[in-house]
Length: 92
Image 1 (spheres, helix red, strand yellow):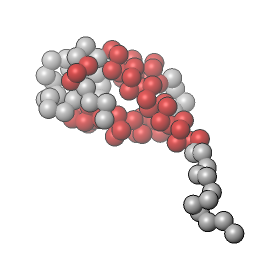
Image 2 (tube, rainbow, N blue to C red; image 1 turned 45 degrees about the vertical axis):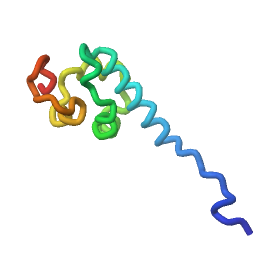
Image 3 (spheres, helix red, strand yellow; image 1 turned 30 degrees about the horizontal axis):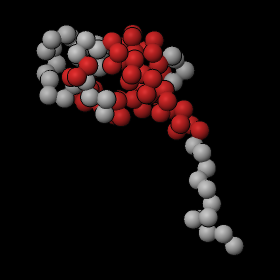
Image 4 (spheres, one colour; image 1 turned 90 degrees about the horizontal axis):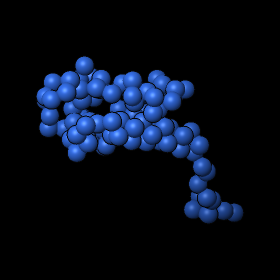
């Protein structure tokens, strides 16, 4: 009789796929950010799953290019310490 400790965890393909998509989106966004040091990649932990659920069938790099500058309510997570409208209009 085996215990749960003896069983290797099953691979969660859906989670792996979602994380890969979110990572591509986040890195594409960072690549086009003129001030990448102001960007918090951790903010994509919050915004990424929302985008993935809505746009998972789309190319994450192209979507990042389309949405760049339009972080809306997620601005405060992506750009902590900055006010919307400071510098580029990132919140529109």
